[in-house]
Image (cartoon, rainbow, N blue to C red):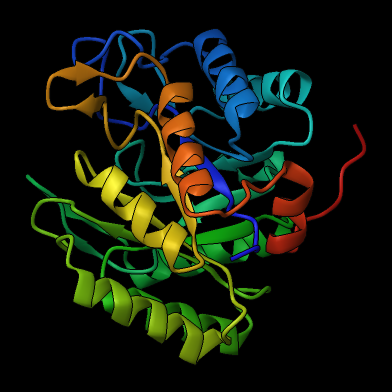
Length: 279
C-alpha cells in the first residue's frame, strides 16, 4: 500500500481538562506549541477548538483568529481545521469563525445522542453552516456519528450545498452513539466508496481506548486517521499521553508497521483538493 496516510491531530476539544491530563493545551499559546510538536511528528491537519481561561469551551472568533495566525506562523503549510461543534456554542455562534477562512471545518449533518445529552444539528443550522463554508471557501469534514450522516452528505453534495467531494470521517466509540464495530466500519467504507467513488478519501476517529483501534483499521483499509488529546488522554490504561505529539507518533508508527507512508502537508492538501499555499 503506497497511498500516503493523512494524520489529523485533534488537539484540545471541548471536554478534557488539565484535571484529566495536564498535557491538554488550553490557552492559544499552549495550543500552538502542542500543535507544532504534533506537526513535527507527522500531523498534517490540526482540528481545533478554543477555550476560555477557565477551560470551558467557546466559539470566540477572536481566539480562533489568534490560533490560526499562530499555526500559520509556526506550522507553515499545515491544514487548519476549525470545529463548528455544538458544545462550544449555539446556532450561528457555531459558525462565527468561518469568515476567517480556515482550510477546513467540521460539519455534522445530523443529530445523535451523546453520553448525557442530545447533540443537536437541526437541518436549518446544517444548511446554514454548509452555505457559510461555500461562501468562505472552507472545505467541510463530514463528522459521521451515524450511517444516515453519510447519506445526508451525499444528498447535500448532489444538491450542491457541499461544493467539493465530501471528506467523511467516521466517529466511533461515543457512548450512546455508534460503537466500535468492525462490521459497521467495513460497511461505512463500502458506503463511502459506493456513494462517492472508490478513490474518495475518508477518515476514522475512535474515542478513548478505541483511538488506536480505529487508527489501525483506517491505516490498513486505505483511509486516513485522527488522533489527539480531544478524543483520548491516554497511551494505555495506566499511562497518560505526555502530549499530542506522542499520539501522533503512535499513529505514524502504525503507518510504518503497515508499510504506509505518512502524508506530508503538501500531499494532504493535494489528496483533499485544498488550495495551495506558499511557505
